[in-house]
Amino acid sequence: GQNIDQPTEMTATEGAIVQINCTYQTSGFNGLFWYQQHAGEAPTFLSYNVLDGLEEKGRFSSFLSRSKGYSYLLLKELQMKDSASYLCAVVDSNYQLIWGAGTKLIIKP
Amino acid sequence: DTAVSQTPKYLVTQMGNDKSIKCEQNLGHDTMYWYKQDSKKFLKIMFSYNNKELIINETVPNRFSPKSPDKAHLNLHINSLELGDSAVYFCASSQGEAGGWETQYFGPGTRLLVL
Image 1 (cartoon, rainbow over the protein chains, first blue to last red):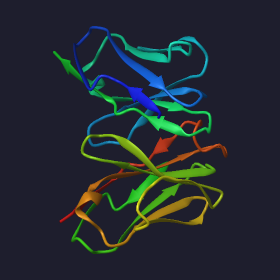
Image 2 (cartoon, each protein chain N blue to C red; image 1 turned 90 degrees about the vertical axis):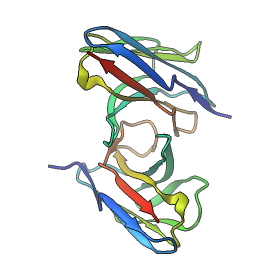
Image 3 (cartoon, helix red, strand yellow; image 1 turned 60 degrees about the vertical axis):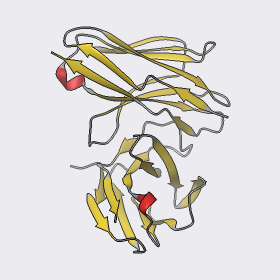
């Protein structure tokens, strides 16, 4: 079967750095998305990786290793507004999007 | 300007009723989706429509039926509502025909509570 694993919840301090990991086992791979979802709101797009390596976008970076079936989202200089759930989603060989359950990130002052 | 909009935002109803949720996108996208997000916050794809044709139909009860009058609209009709249907339903859209690998833009969600 297809499976995406993320930690259920993480806690970090304002101003610090946090890394949210995602591992996947899917039938084929055509890219990996990270979405952010604030409580009570819709998911919003953060990043898309299809090649190995690190993609940096401001305070957020996303890394992919296809051989390891592994990605992480790195958040720097954490702000209180970064408190949200972060969803990892993989595009499989049929171009279907398989969603992880999300990681709830709690930022403390 | 709202890119993907849904109505209603909140829906409270009795078991056994029939209800519809509407979705509209003004992005000119080719594909639209319906997701169900349950209390555990897990997003589950229900349907997607591309150019008015159903291209994904996950194992959802046939009480749920998507209706697309045109490319900009994908409505969700639910018959004989059950307690387990209580969830947040998100509409989304994306460009292109593949249906899964383009960035998806989500509506604000419809919070359905079945009593």
